[in-house]
Length: 200
Image (cartoon, rainbow, N blue to C red; front, side, top):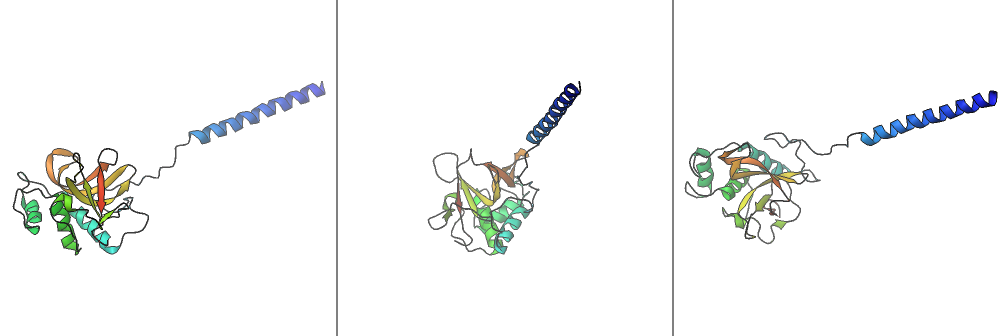
């Protein structure tokens, strides 16, 4: 009888500990994965996933000034006080497309000596094009024809999205508004090219 009770106790304890260990393993496997994505705040360079190296001071100035322009709105097609100031800086008349002029406006304010002009396709000539963009670089994109049709200021990347500030674009929160806005472009849906106009 003693042997029987002893064996029964061992059997019960063995299954009890097996049960506990099983629960611990299940709990660990169901724990949510660590989230390495960086939260993005509106109109700030804080918490943006940028390059692995810290941006230089001039690059920080470029991104901060670009973000300060976010919210400039068109009043009429490619018109409005803020838009026309951007166009005038590039010696362009009101009503002209101004995505490239917005990049020039930011670079002129900070003191970047660049090679591009207001045409989007001029953003990334040989010697300027880079496969490793940094904050403040120009990003060109297109939707047909394999020719750059639109440009913006590169802020960084978050997962599969490239974060930018762009002029002559729609408000991501209200497609009826056009102006200078912060955008998030999917690398899967939008072909992109990058140009280092700051320190090539």
